[in-house]
Length: 264
Image (cartoon, rainbow, N blue to C red; front, side, top):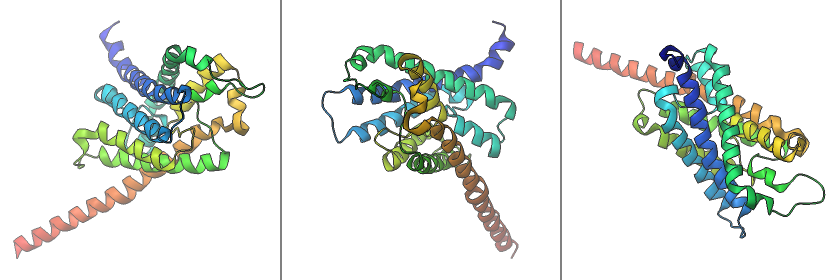
């Protein structure tokens, strides 16, 4: 492959690989909890920590090449408020979704036998579906997904700011932010906070278990697509237009005061 084509394709491959890593780790934990013989009150904790570690590893894998978005909501927020080129948005989202789809495939290969052994009801979806997709009531899901994405992306923008003391450990800090949002706001079947994390695996689940995954919970599938984008945009707006600009104003004010004292 010519070097010029490789240079153009590199960020998209990085987003694909980073999202694949995120999804393998996160869905792997979810599938493990689902197929475990014993239920535990710590499943929510282990899932939230597992997804947070997946975010950290996914960003570490890709950030030096693509910026480590691994989330369409982050990509859109960056395009709206952080100067990310609009021409790359569609390509990034496609790469992220394909990465999540491929991650779901790898998790299914690993857990296929255990998922097949789950008790299957006479009607309704195969329970194995919930190793791959999120589910909630529409209203509760909208609130939880929007709020979690708001908190998460606000933290992402804060941590990756050039003035942030956490910038050198950004992947770890962002993973912790994801775990915190998930722990505080997740339903029993987890949050997405990432449209690719739900939509890519949902397409895979539809191919394996049937198209009913799109009609589940009154066509809930659109909620983890739309709500994280809205929450992410709100979080980015709050940081860029309120937190960061206020900090810059305070810094300018302090510089002016020091200059005035020096002149005196």
